[in-house]
Length: 519
Image (cartoon, rainbow, N blue to C red):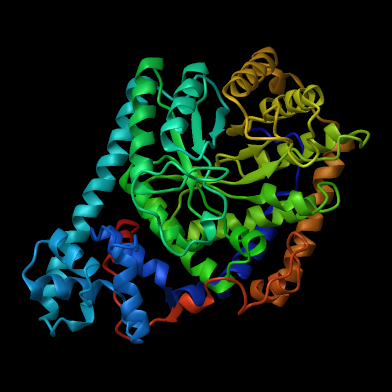
């Protein structure tokens, strides 16, 4: 993309250097620690499955035993595989035994070479299944093609019942949606376990479970074949179980995962140490599964003013990009987020929105940017909402966004009905079709509002990132630098689940991914 804003390349490079300086100490912490969720995700990747009579997942039971005995620092994989070998059980039989009360710590010592060989067998099976999913996705894309247009038109379903979600998702696919996101049940991000099986009673959304992923994947594949295109499936890889959900998504061929570095810390009060360790491992799994992540910078603008604090969005994009690349994600898989959230009463706000969107597109040319619709100022006035969404659609197409989450008429009052998605898709198609080629026909004044605004935001982001780099990211979050929200370093949910790695720590899943990344 040819630059229209003429942003100085040196300043963009400086911002990326600052992002590296911010991420480096955090990465050092990540490398020295594991969490209960990382270890549960590892067991899931090795094939551990099932629940006990109370619905507690087998990976939770196994990891909780190790954590209670102070043995988790060495990793859960070795203990689990040792129990499998010494009990001479099939893997499903071992899982049933754990669900019935077997403690994997009871297993006697096993020849480390035998444990390593068995673990390699299990993890390579996981790797083959994920690679098969990647190949299947690519084959379907080759056969049917991507969405009928760029940007990909992205809609949500959120009934709470996976079978009702399927009806709405299929209807949306038939109406032209290129990606369907299943919104998670309210507060699932705060559950320190993953529910099991198909669910029908979520509130404000549907529980993220592996069976629900499988059901929706199957439905969208069928709908895509009927529509003659591949329809992408999206869910949430965030909260206290983000690494586990990443494994589930890789196993069931999800295409996109909402996965942000700081969202859980700032907006769900999940401990920052827990979040960064979990986020890194989850992104490694997403890299293995060739899954596009969607970051959450749009959320900053729900607590901060979109004009005054626009620089925090850009700074977070730089930081998210650095953390994602550290985890092995290629730029084409880093779906950085931003949003159309200026106060509609602001005169000249549309030029500022265009400047912000164009700036993100030029600074991150290889990333599939995810552009979020107006939400903060949307009320029950559906006619005004429709106008706001039309202007958002214009901005998205005019600035070459990649993933376009459609605004709904009823955003301000309740979960949208099926016809709301149809109208949203119709509006987007109308606007985008009619401004086809618009970008190539216009230039921005070198001294105009948009160029000056983009330069200002970049300068502010650099100054802000200097402050964050000097303080350190953990202290900066504690000092309320992001989204005007302050979180304690050792506070928040899940801190007790963070464990320092022992000298003999071993994680064969991480080893598999790092080999694949050439590390």
